[in-house]
Amino acid sequence: MSSGGPDSPSRHTIAARFERLPYTSYQARLTFILATCFAIDAVDLSMLSFLLAPVSNDLGLTPFEAGIAASSVFVGVAIGATAAGMLCDRYGRRRILIYTMYLWGAASLLTAFAWDLWSFSFLRFITGIGLGAELPAAFALVAECMPASRRASTTGWMQIAASTATVLFNLLALGAVYFLGEAFGWRAMFVFMFGAALFALYVRRAMPESPRWLESQGQHDEADREMILFEQRAAEAHGAPLPAPAALAAPSPPPSAPSSNQLSALFAKGHANRTLFAWGLWIAVMMGFYGIQMWVGKLLVDRGMSVSDSIAIGVLISLAGIPAAWLTGQTLERVGRKLVIIGVLAFVSIAAFIYGHADTFLLVALTGAILRFFMVSLATSLYAYTPELFPTHARATGLGTASTMGRISAIAGPMLVPPLVMLWGYTGAFVAFAACFGVSALLVALFGPETKGRSVEDAAGRA
Image (cartoon, rainbow, N blue to C red; front, side, top):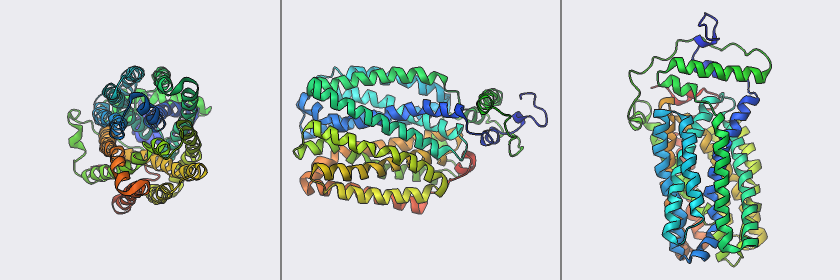
C-alpha cells in the first residue's frame, strides 16, 4: 500500500482515504476509547449536581460558598480547554489525551481529603484543568478519524456512554450517601473517580495519532504510515478488500513551518466568522446548561426533599439521556445539524420553563427527565457540530477556545442562581436560563453553516 504506484491509496489525500473506509469493529473500538473521555467528563461535571448538598452540609458552606465550590471546576476547565487545544494542534491529539489523565486522576483522589471550601475549590480547579484538556483532543479525533456519515452518530454513542455512566454514578452516589453517610459518602465517590481515571489511562494507550493532523503539519510520510496502519486494521475487521478512494488528488502542500500561534489561525481569512459564531453559541448555551445542571440537586433539597430523594430523582432524570443521545446522533446524520440544533434549543427552553414550576416528586422527576432528554440532545449536537467548523491545523484550538468561552459562562451560571432565586424565585431563575437557549437558537439560525455529509476539510471551508 505504500509503494506509491498510480493506483496506490497512498497517492490519495488522507481525507479521500478516510472517507472510503467502511465502518468496522476497529472504528467501534476507537469510539469506545473516546467515549471514556466524554463519560468521565460528563460524570465529573455532573457529580456535584447531586453531591453539592452533602458537600455543603459536611463543609458548612453557605449558598454563596456552595456556588464558589460548584464553579471552581469550570475555571480549571476553561484554562485547560484552551491550553490543551493549542497543545493538541501543536504536538498531536494522542499525547494530550493520555497525559491529562495523570493530572485529573491525582486531583480527584486528593479532593476526597478536602477539609474546607478553599481546599475543595482548589482541587476541583486542578481537576477542571485535566478535564478541560481532554475534550478538544477527543472530539478532534472523532472529526478526523470517522467518515462524514458517522461523525454525528459516533458523538451520539459517546453521549450514550456518558449518560449511562452518569446513571451508574448517581446510583453509586445514592448508595454511598445512604450507607456511609453524607460526610464519607461524597468523599468515597471522588476516590471512585480516581479508579475511573486509571481505567481510562489504560484503554487510551491503544488510540492512534490522527493522520489528518499529521498531514496538516506537513508530516506526510508519518501521516501515510499512520494511515496505512489504520487501513490495515479496518481491512482486517472488514474481512474484505477496502474500496478504492473516491478521488485522486495531490496532497495539500506542507506549511513552511507549523504555526506557533494557533489562536491567530482562528481569525485567518475565512475563519473569523466561524470562530466568533462558535464562541457566541457556547457562551449562550453553557450559561443556561450549567446554571440548571449544577443546581438541580441542591434546589430539590432546598425545596424540602432529602439528599437521598434528590439523588434518586437524579438517577431517574439521567436515564432520559440514553435514548436522547442515540436519537440525536441518528437525526443529525439524516436531517442536518442546523435544524436539529435549533429544534432542540427550542424544546430545552420550554422544558426548562416547565421544570421551574414543578413542585412534587413525581412532577419533578417527569419534567426533569424531559429537560434532561433535550439537554443531552443539545450536548450531542454541540460536540458533533463544533469541531466541523474549524480547519484541521486549528481544530482542537477552535474547539478548546469555544469550550473555554462556554466554561467561563458556566462559571457565572451556577453563581447567578442564588441571587436569581432571591429576586424572582425558582421559576424566575429557570426562565432566565431558558432565555439563554432562545438566544442560542437565534445564533444558529442566522449564522450557523450546515455541515451534514461533508468531509471535515470541506465542512470547515478552506481559507
